[in-house]
Image (cartoon, rainbow, N blue to C red; front, side, top):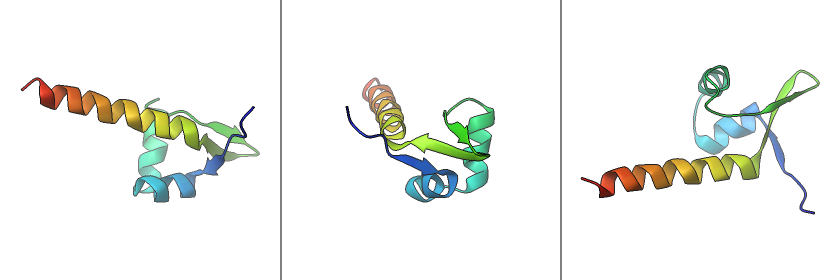
Length: 66
């Protein structure tokens, strides 16, 4: 079993080069998922990476259809 790497909202915002508020907005809009542990949002880095890959592939497919 692989160990999950959980990152907090600051680490995620830094990783994605976004503002914290953007991450909160995405959580509210259910665009990204996380878990609240002890009042702090945590995100599985592998899940974030997988989510980014699906977004990248969708964008590449749409551009390829033009």
